[in-house]
Image 1 (cartoon, one colour):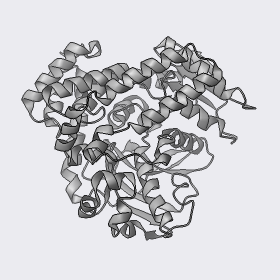
Image 2 (cartoon, rainbow, N blue to C red; image 1 turned 60 degrees about the vertical axis):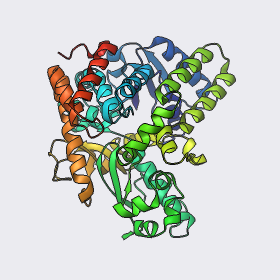
Image 3 (spheres, rainbow, N blue to C red; image 1 turned 90 degrees about the vertical axis):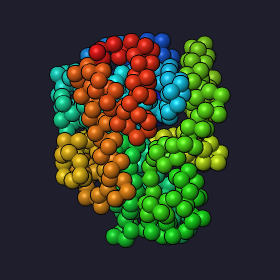
Image 4 (cartoon, rainbow, N blue to C red; image 1 turned 60 degrees about the horizontal axis):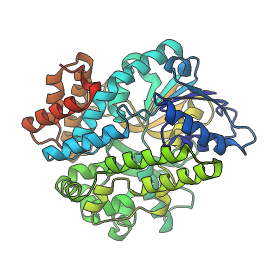
Length: 461
């Protein structure tokens, strides 16, 4: 299999390669093409991968490309993990959000909309290029905001684009792990979630970074009520500590971690305001230091440097939300990796006709959630095989979630229309409608600041 990885100089590329090296199947990747617009980062990453693959008996051939067309041509799978504007762009979004008194998280609210408006023109170009030069390829999209980017890419690729996020599967595995520790489930149940052999059926519905786990069915029985009945068990894993047992039991389901920005918006804003630097600023400094030091380091040293930097990055994930929730720490197992690399590999195996998988993915809605448009992209459990993903039946959206999801989906589609038409007015409308942006005046000031900051937004008139 030939895999093109767009954003090939990105910091988390070794996670993908590490997962590829562990794959011994017939469908494993034999050629890995790395493409990035930052040539220096691409060269630095090539050095890291050389060390990572040096002792492997049969590593994939790594090919570097500064041309999108060259990277994509004839690929079997294209994995897109780009960040238009870089980590510095995220930091700028957070500064703008602070200046107008709103949350600056990179995939929700103002930060997510600004990020999408920068990324959508590039994402469309990628989708067109894949359609022209690799028409039989599958595009696996990890570029955020994953729901918006995936929906816009469907214009050129239809069902051959699949959006992924590791957050829902991570939530399910953490919840199942608690039930394993209690003795309610056999050991290994959590580990196998997301594979074709798993007996677990997840009842999860929503949008990317806006979903709820409503049921976990194992061998025909929903085991989630056992967890929800035990406040101590709820608060023994990350989402439980983040939201608190009282709120989770009130909802009757477990929210995706990103819903903390909605349910505890005031507390997150206060935590953001109290921090010396935003996480984007912190990561921009960290990444700059890493790539600078990596350029002059030897093989073993650069691998150790990467691992230390990666663990620190994971430890500071959603730092403001965890601070707002009382300063909770991440569990050791959550520092190992985000898991998106394993989700991507499971999809590649499934579409190659190997082992089918059950994963929570961003796909066309159809009739899965009847309250949303059929052509909208939603995040739901799917069975994936050689024909691609097929959404599975879910309970639907809980009543308390319906209005929020419909509003955010309308925002997402307005962002796409703004990008397609180059309309500044539609961009302001999308911001003003978002629940985390409090009003038209704030929306207009935030967008004006973004237009002054990002040359990528010059197309908005």
